[in-house]
Image (cartoon, rainbow, N blue to C red):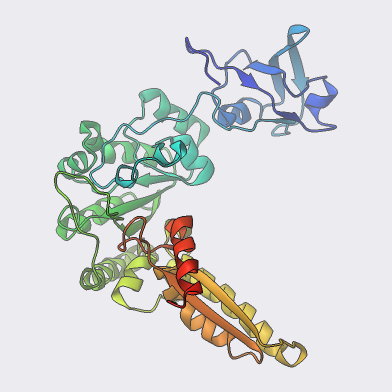
Length: 395
């Protein structure tokens, strides 16, 4: 935690039994003041500095400060455990993006939902997408020195004017300079474009994808995802969500660009989010389309991966159907509108097993608005509403 004046107090939350730290008498609750006489700002710096064979720990315990000299094998873990990987706090977002989902939330929700993080360290540790607009020269050098790779980067547009306008941040226009520097250092990156109709689509989208492809293979993928729009948006220039009639042409444009990349790189490079296929009413591509499933957590390929896994499970149940006895068991699954579209066909196969009936119930999102259809944003209030309506026989 950060008490001020640039000092960071790092509390050791746990010491692994039998570890090097345990053998040197370090205990949970002790303070890690420095490693090799350098303060540590996060778990990344701790791992980087403690990787060497010779390590000097500055520890503060109830009995006072002491220095512990350790000799070990290169890369051997010392055994200290920290609950929070960021000792100096989360880097906050400095942008005011015109499509920001957090800014489209209503008031009165829990405080953590309004936190806008934009921390490159969480990009490396957890796969969070970051804009890189708050990077200092020291941050860039640190990424390169520690080889923090891969990183996940929200680009949205490589046009300096368009990106700066979308993020309402003049520094946003420098993105290609930063990406080139990271690429030259061998940092792998996965990028995304949040597609906003009439803002960064059409020819601007094609320019963005082509600019990013020039940094292949360090820029490994480019995911295109539709903007999320809630009923609470309060922008001076409101924009509409991507419609079903928009989705098909977007998929076609992405596929057209991908054909050229397959010839050049033996990779599609650019991928459309699952939501485009749901909107357009098109089947999801096969597994080969998604290659390494680089952006599954970004909603690109997660439906295909689920369907394939689910079908393997169902085939196993079908093979054992004679050995399984269901006494007319009925299973109800509640999910978002998009989730229901994915599950409907698969549930029908399960219902073919004697004695088993599976029903899928899509829940319209009254809380955020009906344009928000993903299952992860269905609220408890909407689930309760649905259950009350089901009890009354509405569903």
